[in-house]
Image (cartoon, rainbow, N blue to C red; front, side, top):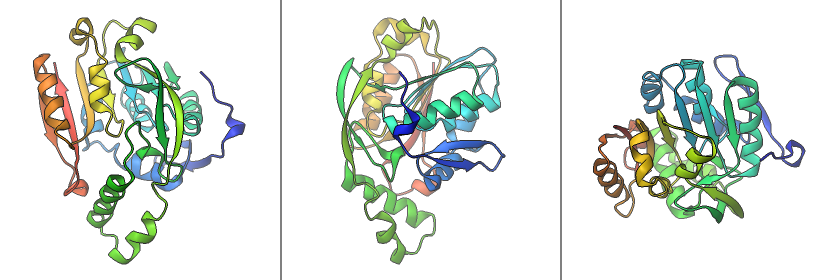
Length: 261
């Protein structure tokens, strides 16, 4: 599915490594790129990838994780999923420019196939979600800014309208349907960053497909017992799990989970 790039404004940004990318907002793109360091979760799982591996980038946003995975191991098959039209335009352009052997798909990934309501934050696209919660998103960002050393007097100003959203209807698919459609026999890395929809993504994996998944890396919102539900589900399917939290996210509900079959 293709979006018409003329329909949406986009910014152009040069990353610290010199690559030029399209993005919705430059400030968020730079923050997202910082998450791609070798010391972080994505850097850790990228180091274990091998040529020819299949990567599903669920909640791809503008594609920075896919760019980093490809830069680490050039010969990968990457499928990147992003439901928001404005963000997808950037994803599609960035993959076309920088990630050969990749496929950009405009869709949410959930526990069902169909049309779902999605909240898009124009000023904070990376926090857009099927399960958006403006108050909780403001509070998480507030704590992140505090941890980053931002003066309290500026935080309210930075948060103003940051999570003012618009409702969209988006197409949703499942991991199992993706595997059938693209004839994927093994997923070497299932990367999930979907802002509270991570459990839904995992619930969309049919029993016969669990043995075909080798590794999972997910950002988890540990609200309402979600982290415990996810770790239990993964262990039931033979995965060992490691959960950690970035110092910049201390005091928030955001955790990083890596699971190995």
